[in-house]
Length: 404
Image: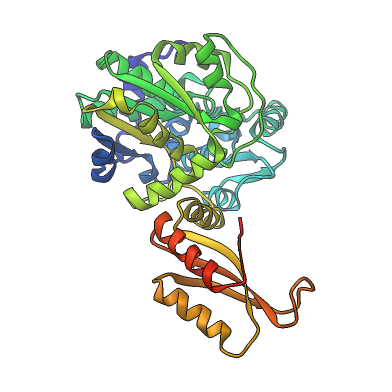
């Protein structure tokens, strides 16, 4: 692969600047106060497709010859790159065929199709779809647009780094997620060229963290690939060429477990009022891990994408609120006498807890004839309030069981 230079990123910038928006860089007051540093969010979710992927794909397609445009392009993607290729193909008047994993989120499939691309579903993950796409490209003569292993794509992604430097010239830290690593490679080259003292931090999901492991050990390393709901960074193995680039520009790396990523999605909703997909939410983990280094510094979190399935958002909210102690799921046994259920709900009301759901069940054989079971989902103000509610219910009810 050709070297990635700041000059190549500037060339990509000249192509993309007239046709793509400069995404906002917004200081987040809540996070800045909590972590005692200036936290800025680079909102790539504001791109037309809701992701930075539009930059690299569009730049690569802009370089096609007329003969290549007639044959069309092909790509493999779990969703965001697919939409970027579809958008770029439409803008430059060529047709796109996208191979997507069978597990790709429905929203990303629909959005890609709506941009004019033809969808081919095959494979369990990105790597499987990639092999299928390469085969089709060879058979049809279509130009393959790689999600990250392409100098033109990386240069396009790197234009986000140019914007950061224009918006915050004295940036101290830039944090970005890594799947294949194309975005952080491009952004890292741009940042280090103009501000070499700035620290670049990369992150992945623990379940797909081969690049993090490789950068930590300073050699290509294989890790178990368990799959992650952060589908935008769900890549099995570290790419050798991207590893070489990242090793020159990345200062620190870390990975996040699935539960932490989910909590980060929820925290972005509450503190920044934005919906972020898993691959974009990983960056929030840097604030806890490097809080001492970042004290008093200017920190940019690259929020890479916002394309997340609404059903997944709902599950994340439910699990997140339970983990935070602001929602409790209980089964309680009370007397099956007239007025018992009314007394239970009155008690909960007096405790200022909100009943989200209540299910009354007399049919369980384990319950005595003079008893009944009530399953409750309650909303509280936090862990202390939840403990207060549970304590009161234990005094009032014959049995209180916490549910997952």
